[in-house]
Length: 138
Image (cartoon, rainbow, N blue to C red):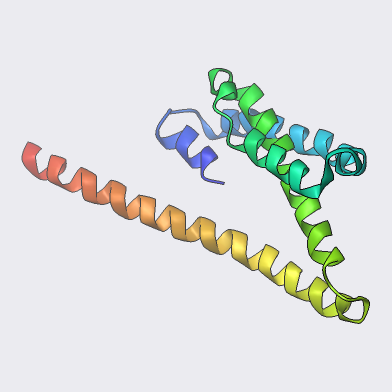
């Protein structure tokens, strides 16, 4: 979620082009979702999540931003669904309703909260790094 901010502020990419750069991320996720059943049967949930995490963190695709975002999208798609499936599979049948609510709360609140904390920390560090430079020039 911080990638668009980095593209706009650090790379100087206009916001409208940043949205176009982010499109391969979502296309990669859409391509990864239909393959989950077949891939989970073939390699298991643990292997699928590990491969998805590897695709998400890959440095190979950084040469071409569209390829990197496609790989990240596919990786994100292959981490989320197997993890949720494993979470539901480990819960007893009578507790599925409570588990669904708990997983949704964690998913909908946890991700934005962590992103906000990371962005706040980065903003604090960037402003702390820029203050001495600004004082030295005045």
